Length: 471
Ligand code: ADP
Ligand code: GLC
Image 1 (tube, helix red, strand yellow):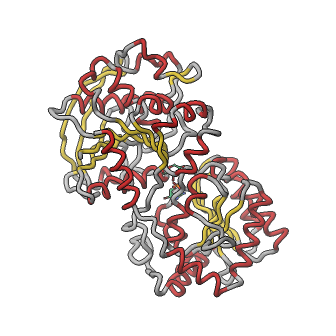
Image 2: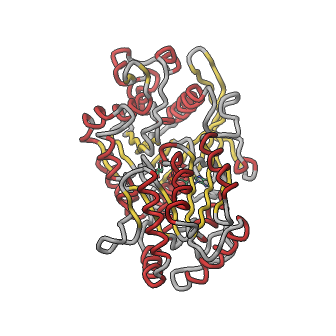
Image 3: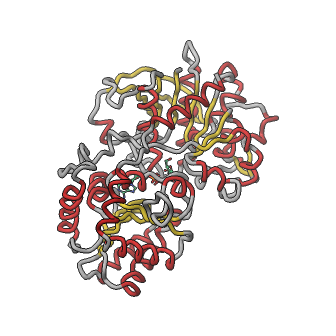
């Protein structure tokens, strides 16, 4: 099968979170399974672009409403990622350093999708599957079905994977002219509550919709940032497929970002050495348990209660643990976490920003990873952490529920709590401190989690089985 993934992110080209990791890995494992899997994404001005060699494979000219623009498709020359990688260059719209966060994101991503469909429409053959990810590619199923000039593509099966339904890409109806002339009877296929909603449109028009865990799919019917009724209505074509992790990138025995490698055979020493580096770098106390948070500092991740929960833990439990936070996001949350540094007694630190190599060292050197997420469609951090022998402390939601069993339950290995509230987090911290004191138990949990299988193989098979029902 020839599968075309369309996405705003793909690791290591450009990554803001888990979407990048997934799109950087899934096609590789689909290729390993004997298929032709390709990725098309915007050509941002990232390091990866500058450090690699490219061939121009197509030049086109298309329009975003009245604005006509040239676009170029380039392909990475050496198959470095293990699959064909194509970038779409649109001068003035995609040639930026960051992925998101610009005022004209609607124009940027709509133009990107038009260029992708335009390019595919120039091919002599049709791919077997168009697999689009999140709202940034959510208009494609509509375009291939209902835009007059792409009518010949309408039989290509489309699959939409929802990594995060909080972000839907809403646009006012004044922007409807951006989309190449379409059948006006199909207005309802773009609309949700009087706005163009690219994610809702994707759910309506894609042949199949997947979410990145089963529990998240269940939750979307109750809570989907306004799309609940749509997920109830479209229940029949929605499937939950848990993400895997790229075991080649995330392996404590060979991780290129850490110096002290280890495996399940010698994790005691290995983790200790990594923890030492972390504690020396961030002025923390090696003898105490190290609890880390890595992620976007937004309400979705429960980051707004983090500073208060850390403060309360010190107050109610005592200064028995270290906290180290890595992340960037809302300025108010960043400044709360920054201020907390003044209260540190060599047991708290905060690194503000995005730092790939530090995140790897933290997975390796930490004892526990805290994820008080309000919404977590899958969550990769807890799976990475477990591969590195770091015990997850997670809220009972979405993919966290599907991947972490509380150590109080049969065959359990993590710490789970029910609410994203300060009290629940503090109690989880208390349980972590207690577990840290029980060396035998902690070591058996570490050895157990390092051996859990979160590899891509089974998810790849589930995707392929779904594709087969369409082709
Ligand atoms: P999400 O995609 O919602 O942000 P995931 O758990 O799926 O959450 O994936 C987050 C990914 O982004 C992980 O690879 C994590 O290590 C990484 N990450 C998040 N914030 C940072 C940061 N500040 N620095 C480095 N890596 C980060
Ligand atoms: C999203 C979700 C996260 C998931 C990731 C990859 O960003 O927030 O939970 O792991 O996508 O699917």
